[in-house]
Image (cartoon, rainbow, N blue to C red):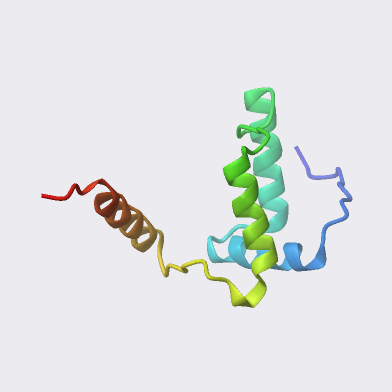
Length: 99
């Protein structure tokens, strides 16, 4: 089937540009990403991810991130593996009991 339908959406320019850069790194256009999303909506008969109201801890984290700007005290990680390694290390430190 040919692509003849159009979707018009108002998106923040910075968000659009950032998303396009991420998608380009994996070789997917914004149009392809939207098409994949809509195919998943049809296949799952709903959104392809869980949508919930964030709990208090998550809301605080979101607010901290949004208000941090460039002076963020949040730790940055170069890779996902580095992030999970750091989380694992912190968990081990928290669960250590004094001798």
